Image (tube, rainbow, N blue to C red):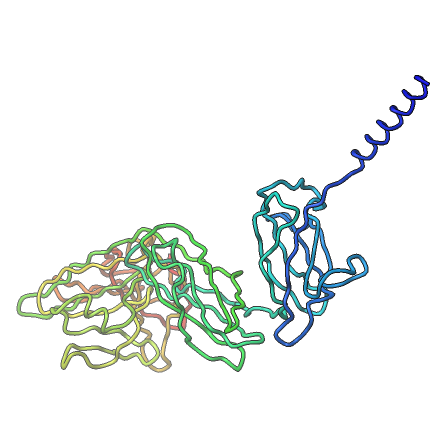
Length: 418
């Protein structure tokens, strides 16, 4: 009897150990998914639960009564958190839930909650909704793409295409460069019924290379945050100009601005120089005639563009010092023009870091079509020149950063300054 009793006890212990080793507790995650606004039922759609950052390892269930859970109520789901692969559920874990797209385009969530020690936890309610692609954003640009810290200004722009709904807002995050994190971009141009250009202008109080995130959102809150605008911000370079008015004579000075600055036209250049400036002129190489902006009546004439690589004549009524700050633009080729039956004069400026140091070197860099290089001496208020005759003769003056020069060509010439 004693032996039989021991055998019976041993069998019970084995059975108990088998029972507890095979037992697996469940911690249920339940929730409600409301039908879509268009009455598409939530029942039959799939819900997944997962840990943040590991959505691939999830456990799933079907909303509403289904063969695996026939007693579920309509619009309800119940999924075991203990069965999420790669994780061991513990009290206090944060569990996420969402309805995934089964192919009909409907989704919901995600939502999340912190689990308790009870037998189940309930996620916040979700509502089924049709997935709509967010606006499409293309052609992010900064113009110019490089500006100087504090003083430089650039235009940021993107092209935005609406998908299903109209565009509500387009913003750019300028927090990296000292601006707002949701700086509003304005509608600049409507291209067609689906595409528009949005833009804004900004400067920067921070130096460096930046990727500025754009957020395009439609009227139903669908957002595209996948596009960034690249911008480089560098320390400003400053050039000082000493403009001369010769006593009893004129006050002409030939200058160039070899920087990207906020001076974009003749009237702005006049304002930058100050009240002593009464005229800003340029030479139009196509017409071979002068164009000018004068201070009379607050400003009149041709308000032409100011660009790196061009030369200008400014007139002052008294000796004047002014300076400009900006960044160095990429060096670009210059088309020098010879007008048929006329002259081939062109007013040019050299790059900030030019390797050309004399008039003769400037003539050589332009090539055999160049027959004269001139400068204006502001002290004497007279022209000085170097011509190609007999291999070169005249005044072989020095090339100075920020000065303007007149070069003459005998035929149209494309010149890359160095």
